[in-house]
Image (cartoon, rainbow, N blue to C red; front, side, top):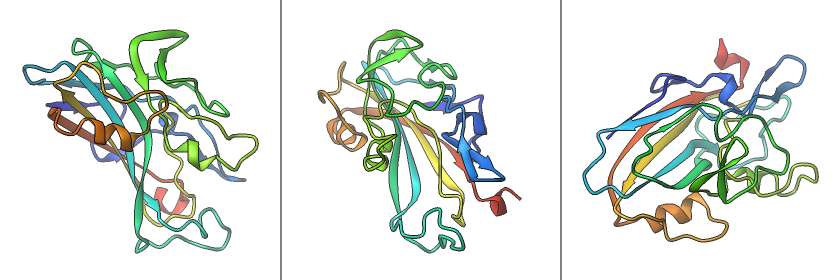
Length: 215
């Protein structure tokens, strides 16, 4: 399989319009337009009955004490963990493109609705969104806590010393429907599709909010 985007090159920086946050000179960061990037895939194996799309971040600090703290930096040596930004399942075999901004166009406090996926204001014909990890990130924030379904883009710490990687992966499956119900996560989807993946393709973007990295 092959996967690509017109929004950015593979292993290149993701433009700010597809991020949750962008740099701000006065406050370090500010909210962005948070649009999902376009994605396209082909060379699909015979027997494909559905697709799954997952976007995960590889470089989240495993310790959060120094995150976005004045006068501190997060060292490159710190162990890193994953963070899911997008989980979309039950994509039909005839669909091999997602247009920019169709699944997310702006930051929605308390999260977008789900699990039924929407394109604009219409339900997207059986596609389902999983919860992304902003659900847990904002769990203790009275203004932002909620269930964050679908795509929400990058917002790495503004004091991190490394750019973060965001890996978009499309899986071709031999099943029509992923056996997960209700609210589900990226980890649960990965477990549910084990043994059903005919092929997969990945495409990676990078993002940083540290002005030193931008230079």
